[in-house]
Length: 303
Image (cartoon, rainbow, N blue to C red; front, top):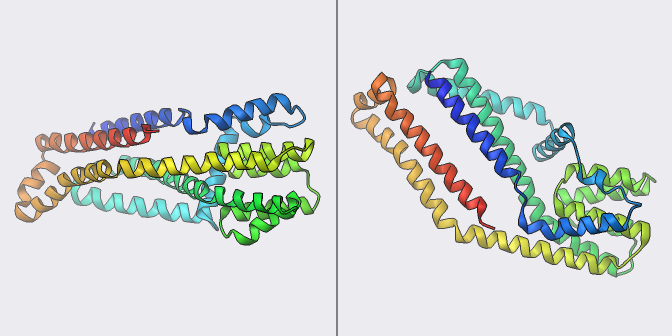
């Protein structure tokens, strides 16, 4: 009964977290509106193919992001990570919890996959938000100097040793080989499914198809991205005290349990193994999880 209660709480948390992730980010409303205006004006571009996708395509896009974050041999790394998590769950359960082992392993695997996926996606997104404006600055400088689009992409790839620079190198190489721009940018958008990159692709393709003032559009995009990055840094600085306080408060019960194990192990055994003491353990886990989730949600809701 207790293990099913823990699994139910975990699944409810997953569902609520995914519901929150579906909310649009107000920082990119400008980019989305501009993309919609350009899609009406430039009917020659398949913009819907860049932005719309079904469930299978979204899963594939998520896997592309995860594999790119892990680098070489992503599947063996994931398998080793899950084996480590299940080993730790087995040790903790046998040492302190004494829950049904199969259900503990299932819950630990689901939690590890969820938080591991979110960690990899967020880390790649933060790296993109940091590197992309700098890459656009270099690209705009090359275009202003009279370089072609292909040469500008190649120049950025030479001076930028990061994921964005390597992606620009791939774009430049495929353009040099004569591959169609639609196929090239479709592939790039799957690896970087972010609104700023989609708007950048739309701008580049519109310039290549119809011409236009690429420098001014890139300048506006760079300004928006830099402002969004500064706003994110300001938000993290303003909420740092609250986040650290929440982590300290969340760690106090577990530190107290470790101290209790050294001072009076019988009291800890009552909480962990006695049927009446288990309710204290359930209250501790549920209240700590709920509190940390509320703090996480409040921090993410600040725009």
